[in-house]
Image (cartoon, rainbow, N blue to C red; front, side, top):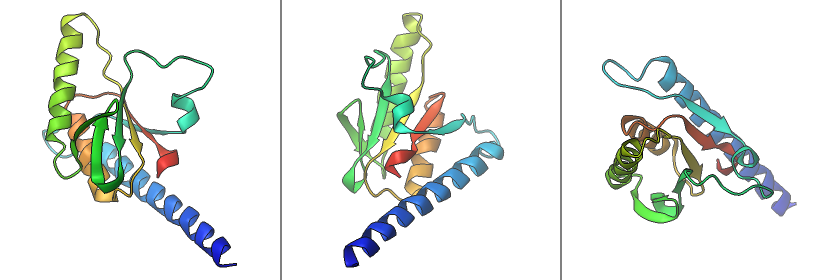
Length: 144
């Protein structure tokens, strides 16, 4: 019975976090991010819509993982923390610049929250990704 309660509480907690993050991102996108900010749209997707077992991963795919303790990684390479996403944004800016020089204009970023990141920290991360000119930004909601 105790195990059942814990499982239900965990599922409820994930749903609440997903709802908060979805509402925050909808408000963030709807208000335009405030005056002078160049806001990119955020889309919430199921993990299966991004990663499939029967297909090879897209070679230009950029995945930002949010791990335990707020650690960030870009395509499995450690790139800072939620408190300081500057390193991640610098790397993304460099990747986008190199791609533009090569005539590639793909700037899609997938965010996969795996740790216990809070709503405000994820909002800040999405704002920073938007400032780094990532578009579209897709958040895997299975990890929330």
